[in-house]
Length: 288
Image (cartoon, rainbow, N blue to C red; front, side):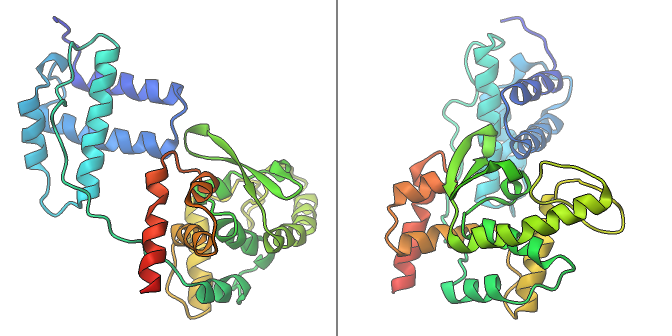
């Protein structure tokens, strides 16, 4: 193999491939960060044919010892994906990542709010100028188990009767059941949504959008959703919850009430059943 492509250029090509493959923006950002870290270590102009198992091990040993195991495993996974792509594109004969294993995962159980605390959050005070909109956020996170980015991406037309079409990671779509309280929250928000859009003389397919001094129909971003969840939690004398804790609560509470773990995994959009099995462990610990 005589390929002298610089590793930095190869990384850029790989990221272009990931975008064409419709990988999620978060996935691409993670690949970019992890691979640029590796490039900085071995040198931008290093040829891809000079990527060896020894250099990869040297890079891993150079990482900050305080990094979490999950972070190191993510960096290794990014390198493996990149090297496999190089092999698939016939830029390398074999992957230099073969035989490289990361630290064993230390599975920490997620901090899952109790059902009582979730009831206090969902039904409690919402310190906002737009409480109807923000209650929809809470319901979609907890009742439907959506990720924050999925909540931001919901359109009005995605609702059909008692189901919601969700666009998840990698543009994968799934249908999620929508409970009575979540439907009620959406129903109460829709007339106000229409009123605000009419007043601003604007249109948008988004269910949720930014409201404030500037007239805009930008979708709510993940940061705003985080701020909403945190503010509502603090206002109701609860810990400053993160949106993902509401998703964990959805999975755990559904399993607590008898939903099979396979159905939980499908509802939450987990590609692997093993990812959802953490909820069985949480349920078991809560019973002790």
